[in-house]
Image (cartoon, rainbow, N blue to C red; front, side, top):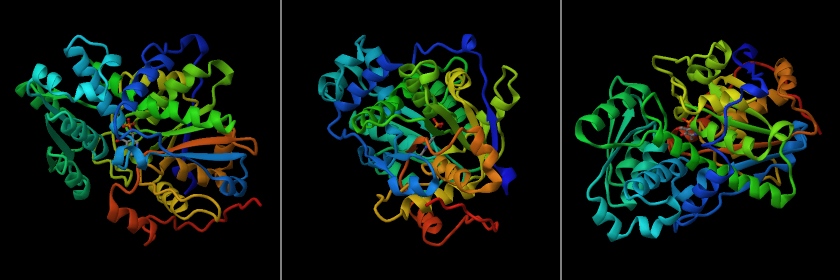
Length: 413
Ligand SMILES: Cc1ncc(COP(=O)(O)O)c(C=O)c1O
């Protein structure tokens, strides 16, 4: 079992590090200002798991609960909405600072823009965010979902007025290519949360949009007087991880920066294998990518984000589905006195993996490599709630994906 947890440590030299010109404090400030103009905007809760941290033998654990984001049960709308805002600002020759929600959704702006169709591919959360933003702007939206996607996630997107279909036989990366083909043929605007050569502007804005939640977490921690030593981020293509890593690296230069770990499912560990190969090339995972962490089932690292992760992430982890399921169960069934968090498969991926690493003797080496000890203050992002309502309950109530290995958990008291 232990061997399905894999780690690669990063050791990029200081002088080889990518510059943070597109993801930094100033860019994040703009993104947060934009999001704060939405009537739905509220800072999502940062939950302190004090009792659990004692049991796990670390100083403190914080989980930012993105299930509260705009009533959409996931953080993803931060990226899609910001990219659409930036696209429109560009088109109108304006600065995003002068285009708050009220203006963006005004008749005046709609008349100037005319009809636009936004198109994207998604496992669910990103598409729901793009559909939501399109709906608010009274524009059209088309969403393609990979084979095997959850019908509930599809229906949530359709409920926002988008045309949304599950594409038989196509995985996430195939859907991205097909959506791009439609965009080129029909003049649709592609709002994709990943980049490739020649398609970098919108994904860059998406990364900047995600960083709003990093800034919120930083402010919340400051208010509590807490200094994090470790941040763990889950990665599909790695745009979210880039937003968080870039932001925290820009505010904490050099040794001040917390240890940042990027976590991926073993079936879709494209950033992990790219870090492992360490040959200056990006490496893809292909095929079905059959993991319960649907949001992380992406095989191609985001090209604009990779240099930031390569430079500033300290470790890349590849973990089994059972760890995410365990994370969902622990967060949904907390120790007495700790708050409950409803965290979905991709949301609980980092927390679940670290929960195993902190408790299992056969993973002690990884714990050491992550520099986790009794002084650690760890920040996780629960990036989604129960976005697949039925599967969430199968995991949390009925014990799907339970780790059947017979091992002893270490309990510190
Ligand atoms: C809930 C959730 N968490 C994390 C991610 C990972 O984001 P990225 O693909 O930018 O790495 C996704 C992506 O869809 C997601 O839906």
